[in-house]
Amino acid sequence: MIITWQNILLAGVGVAFFCALVPQVVKGFRMKQGLVEVWTSLITFLGLLVYVVVFYSLGVYVTVVSSFLSCVCWLILLIQRIVWGDIEKERGKPQGVVCLSCGQYVVHDKFCHNCGEEIP
Image (cartoon, rainbow, N blue to C red; front, side, top):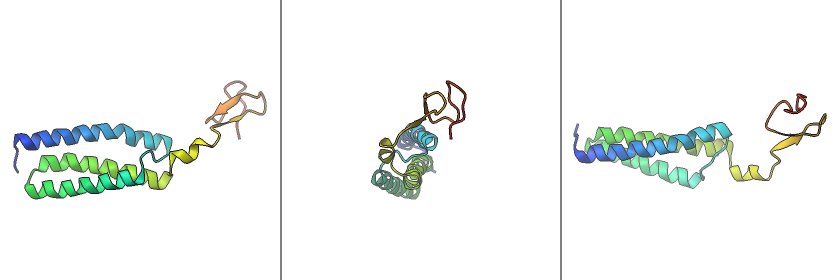
């Protein structure tokens, strides 16, 4: 295993990219929507996969791990988009309903905050 300043620097950048992607992945799971375009996710995932193979062949295993983590995040973003679809499609749909008992507008809840009535 080769540990040089270049390996450490590349690994550090890879970890920073991974840390930057984690909130995006978590947001996708919370919203149950694909927030990144398919082609963006696919091309970045495949590019990082190439990096992983090249870094492995060079013996810079610390960089392999950090690049692999980013690669997995991009794969998750791609899968989220394929499974849950496009956020743009949801923008035209109403985000809530009107409570039939009190007329209060209720967004994404099972009960009205005004009167406590269950929302169907």
